[in-house]
Length: 91
Image 1 (tube, one colour):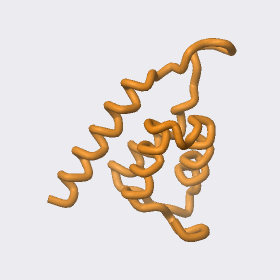
Image 2: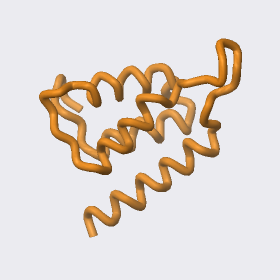
Image 3: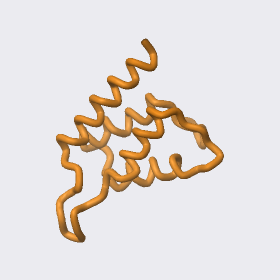
Image 4: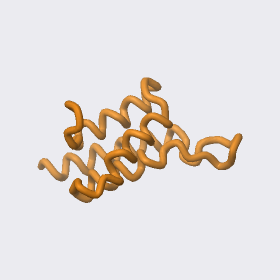
């Protein structure tokens, strides 16, 4: 992504991959996604909006000291579903 250009689905997927691989914290992924998702000047298709919505809540916990609401296996499943939805869009 260059500057303030709206990210495409590939860039959104890259954030999921970075979280899964431990290169991006859940907090950073949440902040990045929320910055884009809640910008009312942008338009998103259904898949992009769905994926950003997941990333925007990826750091939620069961409580102040609790585990993440969605564990690593759930995040990997979201990434897989994102890839499947992306393939349907392009194919």
